[in-house]
Image (tube, rainbow, N blue to C red; front, side, top):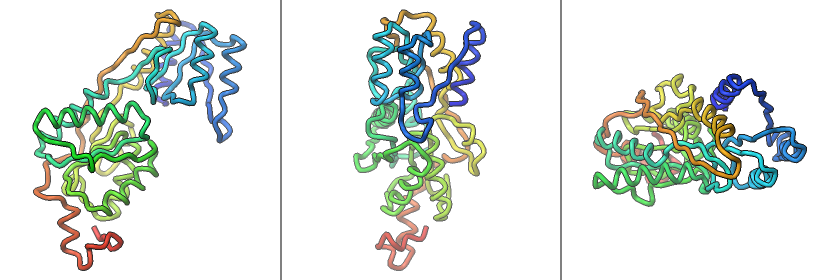
Length: 283
């Protein structure tokens, strides 16, 4: 969000236009009343919604009724009554498939965010299509949902995933925050990344470069997305929705490498007495 705001402010500064920043969870619970007040009182000339979901529909409807332009950045559902700025997540997923295939990976798993997320579904679709084009299936039992986008959800998923001893050599997580949580648990369990398991994320958060090992990821041009959202507010009529998709960039760092000859999780389980029981997992 910081990178988005930077792009938004850069574009607004060039137009001598001010920014009002509103949080929909300012008091620890969801409350859109302040922003709805801005719309109804005509205190704003347009609205940018970052990562909106179904609960933001009344805000979009209020803008449409007030004939105010509204731009959604990476909405978590299909939006038809507002401008949309997002990345081409299908192509990004296919790029990850090509990269991992080139490293020799054939047993690849995917962990997504919330089930309703458009970004998550499209990233999975691109990964699945990219692998299928190379004759590699992404098995249904290797596609998971973490239920959330945050770090704790990635950690909770890691406990389940590693406890189930999956026969995979690479894992793609639908965003970097989930990857951070997963890697923390993997390191605690003694997993070698990427020696035992390669990990790839999405988003390109700056924190990923600070990890040991630094996270391989698909980077979203967040600053450019903020800038583009502002341009749409000024350039397009409120009732002519425009969809803009930007290209993501593969950032190769240290968490992905050549495929291990067999799943490290299963190999180590066989070496531990009683390791047929998940509760004694010792990797």
